[in-house]
Amino acid sequence: MIKNPANSGQALLLIVFTMATVLTITMSVVSRSISDVSVSTREEESLRAFSAAEAGVEDVLVSNLGVGQTLDEVVEVVDGEPNVTYSASVSGFPQSSNKYNYPVELAAGESATIWFKSHDEDGNLTCPCFTGSRVDVCFGKRDGSHITPAIEATLLYQNTSGGYETSRVVLDPNASRTPGSIDASGSCNINDGNEVRYRFSEELSFTSGSEFGLSSAERDNMIMMKLRFLYNTDTTQILGVDLSGGDIPSQGKKIESVGESGDSVRKVEVYELYPSLPSIFDTAIFSRSGGLTK
Image (cartoon, rainbow, N blue to C red; front, side):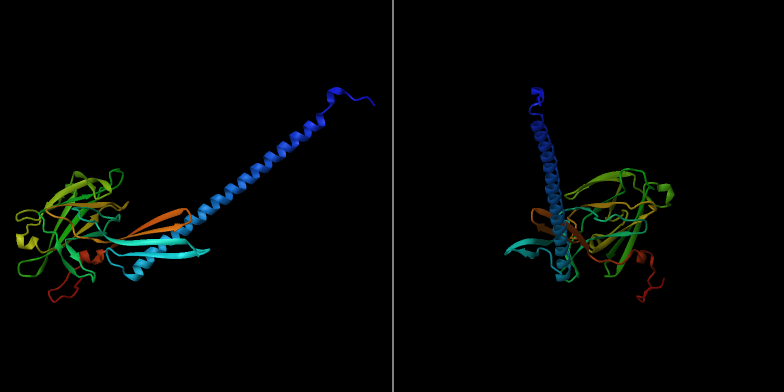
C-alpha cells in the first residue's frame, strides 16, 4: 500500500484539535461552575448579613435601648471565629438641627406630629424645648404629576392659666379651594443631612398678631404641632419643617444596625417616632368633663 505524503500527520492534527475543543469546553464549564458557586456564596452571605442586621434591630427594640447605647452580638461562630455578627446603635433624630425631614410619606388624612418639647427615657415631656418665633412648613413632591395637597396645621400649647388650647390654620397652594386658608405657593429645600426639595411651602409665625398669635409665655409652653395632609388621594406626599429661633427637640429614636457575614456587610435603619394620638382624633370633640363626645 502506497501512502500519500500529503496526508501524513492529519490524524495527529485532528486529535490535537479535538483535545483543544474538549479542553476549552471543559474549562468553560468549570469556570461557569466556579462563578455560580461564587455568586451563590455571595448571595447567601448577603442574605445572612441582612438577616443579622434585622436581628440587631429586633434586639434593640426588645431590650428598649436608650439614646447613645449600642449592642454588639455574635450570631454564628465557625471554627472558633465569628462568622456572622451585628452591631446596633440608637441615636436621637434630628440631632442639633432646626431642620427636619419627616421620615415617612403620608396619605390624605394622615398626620405628622412635630414635637416642641423633648422626651425623657420614660416618655414624659420635658425640656429643652423649642420656643422660637416661626416655622416654615414644606410639603409636596416636586414632580407635580399628582393632586396638589394641602396641610392642616394644629398647634397645641398651654395658655397662661395652665390650660391646654389649640390653634389651627390651613395651608393650600390653591387658596380658592379652601376658604380662609393661607396661600402656600412657595417652595423650599431642607437639608438635615439628607437634602429634600419640596414643591410648596409657607412661613407660619407664633408671635402675637400673627397666624397663631401666641404671647411670649405661651410660646414657652408650645407642646407640639400636628400637620395633616388634605386632598392628596392619589399618592402619598412628603413633609418637612424649618424652624427659626432654636433647634427642634428629638422626634424619636433612630436605630442603625450593621450585619456582617464573610465579606458581605448590610445596614438597616429604622425610625421609632415618639407616640402620638392616631389621626382620627384630629377631628374628635372633647367635653369639658374630659370625655370623648364625638
